[in-house]
Image 1: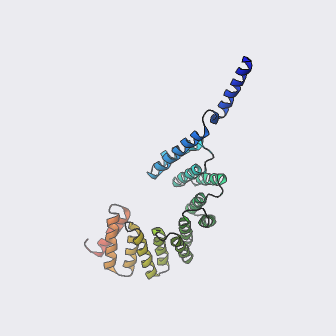
Image 2: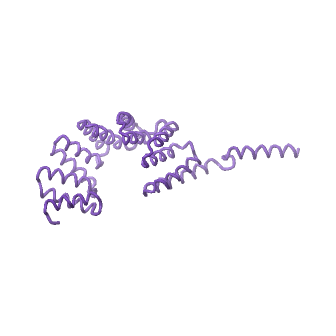
Amino acid sequence: MMKTYIRYMWIFLLICMLFPACAQDKAILKKKARAKESLGNSLIMDGRLEAGLKELLEGEKLDPENPEIQNSLALAYRDLGRFEEAIAHFNRALELRPNYPEAINNLGTVYLLMKRYDDAIPLFKRAAKHILYRTPYIAYTNLGYVYHVKGDYERAILYYKKAVEKFPGYSIAYDNMGLAYEKLKKWDEAVESYKKAIQHAPGAPVPHLHLAKVYLTLDLKKEAAQELLETIKADKAGPYGKEAQRLLEGLRIKK
């Protein structure tokens, strides 16, 4: 009897060695994996990409079938410029959860960065129309940008408008719309778009700078100076503020 007991104990211990989840509850492993993912994403947001990637990889080891961790890993690789690895992890996320609109959109951004525009477009369209996607305006803005860089400004504007229909306060879409109108030399529409961008994000320097440049094109120096001052106020030590300072000095207008 004792021999039988000892034999089964050895079998049990062997199984536990082969399958760690036997020794540690899967729920605990998943919890630890989520903590690693959270820390990794926080580090990445702070600009510590390599450190963040390390935490995410550790999270993946704890929970290799977690699509959120795969998505976060892919974003980290994307931001590091390691596009093929990013694509692999986005595809893995989509294997684990086929209806994962964030991963679909994010995969499109990798193709966008790689200038594989025709690969990016169907992904952005798929994400934008996904009923579970909470931020379709981002996918529509991405679609607009793809057509923008392809030189199809009319179609770009169409998608930027779809973006602000979904989220009327999305400043980035209005700012991009202004740039597209500039390409078409539709100055009044560009001015209006930049004003809406500023309305929804008054502290953002970029739309102020873009509006200032349109005013300079239209030889409206007083209006341009005001927008340049707003740009400097919003980004005094940054690149936009410095560019605004140079343009303001060119106008010979004192702050």
